[in-house]
Image (cartoon, rainbow, N blue to C red; front, side, top):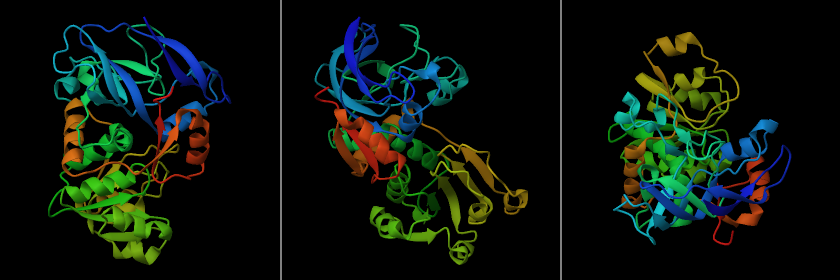
Length: 346
């Protein structure tokens, strides 16, 4: 066993504290990673501030960058000292139709999550990236391009691939218009990717204060969603609309902005059922789709694309012992646009 240290919340209502726990010894196809940076996602906030005693103790964190410290005997393309990245999936069956189509995130047996999932090696639950060391199957360990800063690229392993994958899947590019609802941790990356793919980009936001920020990120236009006239003026102007908010919106005004055959993609997961006016879907023959994370192939493509187009997240880097502060500020929206923990001293 490899003994490591993580930042764990051990009980509902508790604060993160240093906690020792084991990682498996590397199997032939494994990579041992010394984690240097890990992004703080809204999912981490939800889990760490949860109330179900059965979920604890939990070591969260699922968007990591780090350095290889050891490799298994069958790993020939990575070696100690290489820079790598790890996301929110660390395993899948490898046999189902989804896995064989490079859609490991849609594994029929459900993928092995970086934390809070069933640990197929040690039993119990998996422990995440708010830790000094993690052991990962080589398939789910990604070489980090030299052009990418390790702190600013950590969120790409969740927020990045979550927005990049549907843009690729639904054909964002020259001659298309992409709308992005919500300019936050996911939304700011969606704007950058869509612009780099050659699409016309429209940001939809409730906040007039974010208009300049959205344009600086690459949006060609900004629509204030609380302005009924502005929303009406956007009628049938968008081919692909990514909803990154995680809020249960009244979808009718947003579906009305879709062109004929347009697609609305749900990325943020609301806590309430979607409210849909059937006619706003039927008229114009529109589609509603969901998307979450990405498989191995699209994650590698996302990292290469990010390096080629100098795309990283806007981050505020905090030392590991300030995770509780990051969670508090994330809960009240006091971040632009993503927190990243520096785990080098953990």
